[in-house]
Length: 102
Image: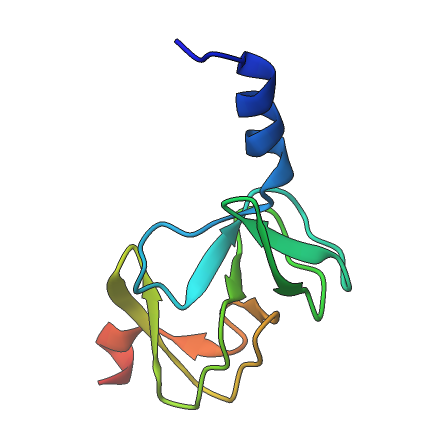
């Protein structure tokens, strides 16, 4: 299936976030990411995490303004309740469900 499976496995384990859609402004942590650790997607170092990001939680891929939509899977899933810096953990402490907010 793969010419060199080792290269395929190295790629999987090198990425520590998943970006599902090009429109997304959050990525999904594939492992717990320590503060200061490089955030890597598709083999590219994007930035360093500003705080610990728990596994399966969201990390901001860009600065997000208050009341800006949180985009995951290419679709809005929530609205930010405060400014969120690129590299910050995105969770219930800094977002609200768009359905409840509007």
